[in-house]
Image 1 (cartoon, rainbow, N blue to C red):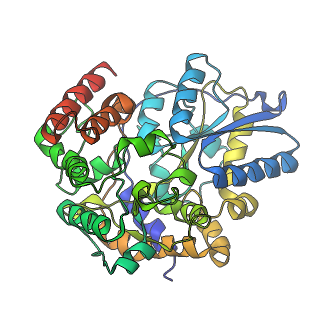
Image 2 (image 1 turned 90 degrees about the vertical axis):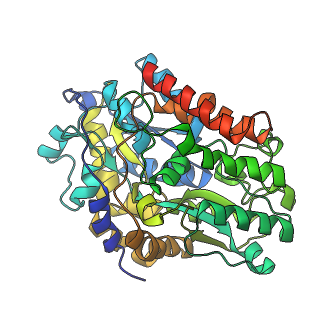
Length: 438
């Protein structure tokens, strides 16, 4: 296996600095009130690990730590409610796609003071990885790991059907393969239904286009640009190889444990593929162990030009909220999580490869087979075929990513209510309206 250090070097090239101003000062009340609330999203495997991490920090520092775990969609709804009530957790997990919105709304505390006074040590973090958490030159977040988009496929089903996937494939090739899999095995496809817009963004990147454009209150693409994405759903439903909405009505598809790749009693309710990220391979393999234990394998998402489309992504950030009354202690937690062997060994590669180069070396001997596969995939497949990640999504993009715009549009196509062409127009109109309103 090639050294994972190579991943960090490319993450430097993949990350860029972006502009958005905010201000704030640290609060030193931690000594007076030694307690922290830590919030994150994830599956049960991550929740179990995070509970151990929080307990270890509590024991090491004689403080109270309250963990708040949620599934992806619930997480952002709860944070919005907390923000409105000015009662956000002290430390929050932050996604790259939401970073700009939270900064522009004044909800995050800059970390520069804690870095300059040595509370948060960054000397072992690659500059590019570090810069991915910056806006307008201010450090608002510290990446908890590096990952990349990946199709995670049921290789056992493909092998039994005699189907070989190309290393890289176009959308048309993907649709042909999905049809073959269905005809030979009965397994259907889930084209990332009811999740955020990363797959649509990826497909557009392969065409040299940027979904959210120049952050000027409108999309950077037209209905004609996005129509091929919706045509996958349209063709899949017409030909029978895409899962229908009834399957998703009875599961939480944002839960790893209920992802159709690993959940379901018969092929017609299961998918041979899941559009996730490399950091989720081990959790999916663990979930699959209870349902036939198929071999799962990583492939690049489909695109016209994978080298243009693919990228290294900060797996998850840690950030301190502006409303926290324990900012010094919160900064200490982020430093400990990033630079101490105990939490790093507990988490492994759950949130991607550790960003501290020394910590990355510390866990190399403990990597699971899934983790080793993820590192190998990053080194051999993603790094030679990737480009700079898009800037953080603008304010208003959460509406676009949610059920009111993308989710509803996808659903309408799967239910046969509208064509792919009409869906593309609807999506662009609704998205531009949401971005204009912010």
